[in-house]
Length: 269
Image 1 (cartoon, one colour):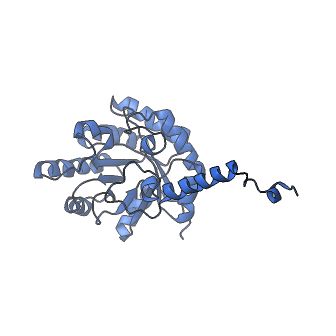
Image 2 (image 1 turned 180 degrees about the vertical axis):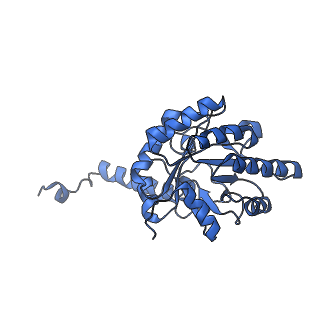
Image 3 (image 1 turned 90 degrees about the vertical axis):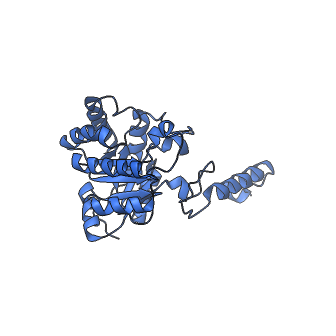
């Protein structure tokens, strides 16, 4: 495994070489270490932590303090992978000055290597200002979870010609603004392929078919740790919710039936 540090320019080099980019979400120190040791390229500290870690129904309640705390923990564990921090809802939508200030806080207080924000043309000026300050920005178009109420739920985007054109324009606007990569979420595979072939920056797909430059998955989904909802496109590599539940139940039974701790383990005869 290549031990060299992954940076934002590294992802562009990977696209140029035709090498796929692996991205998983991470929310604490242990996940950061596991991502590093497994060889995953990018640890995305997603605002999805609001749902899978904090128990919210959407990502909208996640705060800057939440993101800084969790991202700092991930960054302490992930020394090789590029750590990307989501900018939470309303941390960049009000004006570009607030956006720059909050992006700077994420970088300075959490140790992230880049920030990610949602939207296309409407945030291009914000992206440009943040990039001009020396902060790498990853974009995000298609299904943008912070706009879930506007979309009427977590629904695929870009299925008709008009919306497909809008997403193409948004992705290009992010590239023109200086974003180093763009997430394509829940859009038709053919549209994602076209955007990937058109852009010079890497595309990171999630529910967007097999032709993006890289792919991101919510770790709790792929490990079977979030039992409320699993997207249809996710391949589950384990079912840790069920196996952990069984382990907890076995522990509870052992404690109540005086089988734990075993006498030999406590030093008693």
